[in-house]
Image (tube, rainbow, N blue to C red; front, side, top):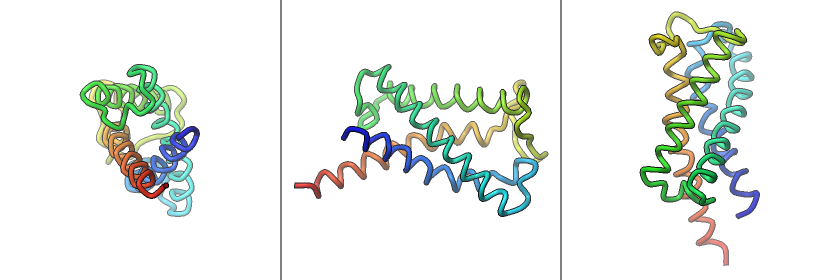
Length: 147
């Protein structure tokens, strides 16, 4: 599959993360203007695509299989959840508390003690398994089509 597989993972990740980003936009301060939210959420979904590629790379390294997500088993799901949780909590904490890149509205539910948004953390726990499953389904379909 070569470079096509990471590109497919990235594309599917961006396409699935964009609606999530749009849905959670009201939980962030400053995204009241719809046009601003559309652009900001698009850029955020590109970053999310890179984060899913990071999960893919960690899985490849940890499980020593390029296609580890095709049949992830317990260890593959553990990689997805561990890396997704670590990356999402880390990014949210740094962006909110250190860099002050964004702030939450009063409607954002937060993880007690570390005060990071539950919704963006859940995003990197819920979407990567769906993304990898979709990529596998697409690859299987294309493999049946190709001679």
